[in-house]
Image 1 (tube, rainbow, N blue to C red):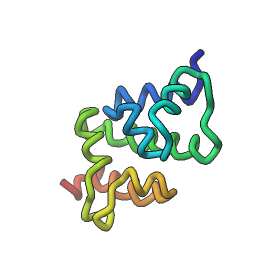
Image 2 (cartoon, rainbow, N blue to C red):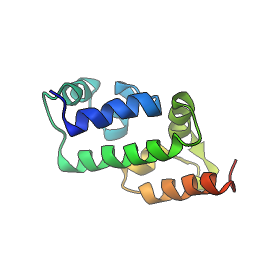
Image 3 (tube, rainbow, N blue to C red):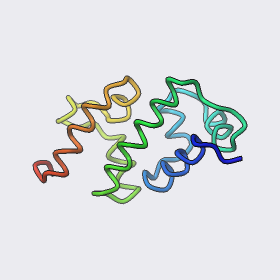
Image 4 (spheres, rainbow, N blue to C red):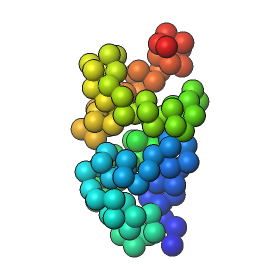
Length: 112
């Protein structure tokens, strides 16, 4: 059964190059839990759904600039413009706005 969450997880895999274990690490659950969400056998709690939705939004924005493999690497790499933190950690801690601010600099061509 396809759910909104399972469709978002599919997009994260396709557009963001993220594997189930990546998503599991980002939202602090087991890969088996992500697999159950993907198959529609379980649903994440509301906070986790929010993190997944924010991650999808960031991945959608990054897809304008990077391939899926590059997007995955970008999310996992520490960035000077993020205070030498990783985007995935900021997204998980509810600081997606900081990540999006850096993505907007990509859009304006101010960051390479």
